[in-house]
Image 1 (tube, rainbow, N blue to C red):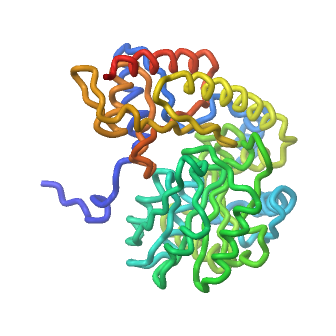
Image 2: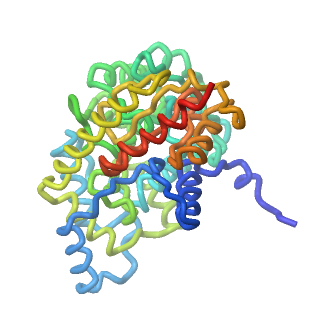
Image 3: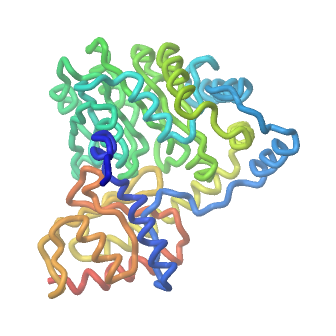
Length: 397
C-alpha cells in the first residue's frame, strides 16, 4: 500500500515534461516523432561558456559553494541587473538556485501562507499553478483573451485583488504565448500593485533576451513598487544552457534572506561548475544571443505563416520567446471517425498518434481552446511538422 502525502497527491504531473517523455518513448520504439513540446533552444551552449566550465574543473571548484551563490557570480548578476534592466540589486539581494523553477518555488514558499491568494495570468506557464497549490495557497486565474493578444486588462487585475491576495506572478515575454507587455501596459499593472499594501509580484523574465519587437521592461524598474517585486531570471533560455540548471532572483533583502534560509535546508548551494559557466555566460559579449534571436525570429515567421494556412486555426503573432499558441476551437467536437476531439488534451494526443508530432494541449496552461508549439527546432522540422499537422486535421469532420 502507498502512503503518499496529501501534498504530493495535490500536484499534477507537468504536461510539458509528460509529453516530452512520451515523445522519447515513441522515438525509442522507432517512431519518427517530431517534438515541439519542450521549451528548449536547439542550439548548443556557446564554446566560451563550456571552456569556463572546463577551467573551473581544472581550478578545483569541487567544494560546497556558498548557499546563495559565489560572491563574484552574484556581483556579476548585480551588474547585469543594473546595466541591462535598470535595477539596483546589491549582491546580498541575489540568490542563485537550480534553475528559475527552483527560484520560483523558493519565493512562493517563503512568502505564501496557507489560504493566501496568488493571482496568475492565463495562459500561464504550467508550474505556476501547482507550485501555489504545493505552498497551500489559492490560485486565482485571470484570463487574457486571444483578441487582446492574450494580455489581461488592468481592470481585470483590480477586480481580482482581495484582502487575501498576497502575490501576483507575471511573465513577459510569455511562456506559453510569446506575447510581450509594453512599458505603458506594465506601468498600469504596477500602479494597481502600488495601491495595495502587502501585495507582491514575481516578475519571471527568463525570456528577456528573446524579443522581436519593442523592448524588454523589468517590473522592478518602476521605482514606486521596487520593494514589492521579486525578479526571477536565469541562463537557460538566453544562453542555451537548459541542462546547466542555473536560475537566480533579485529581491528585497528580507525575501532574499528567506530564500537563502530555505535553500540552505533543501539543496544548499547549486552546482559549482555550472555557476562558473553561468558567470562566463552573463559576462559575455552577447553575440551568441544575437544569433539565436535571429534564428527564432525567422522560425516564428515561418511557422506562423504555415499555421495560418490551416483552415480553422487562429494564430496570433508572438513578439518574443519561442512559442506560438494557436486557438483550436474550430476542431473541438470533431472526429476522424475513430477519435473525437473533446478538448485540447485529446487534440495533442491525436496529433501525436496521427501526425507523430508532439505538442502540448492548452488545458495545462489555463487555455483550454489552444495548444502550444515550441518552435525551438530547425526550419526543416517545423515545415515537416506543420505539413503532418495539416494532413491529420484535414481528416476531422
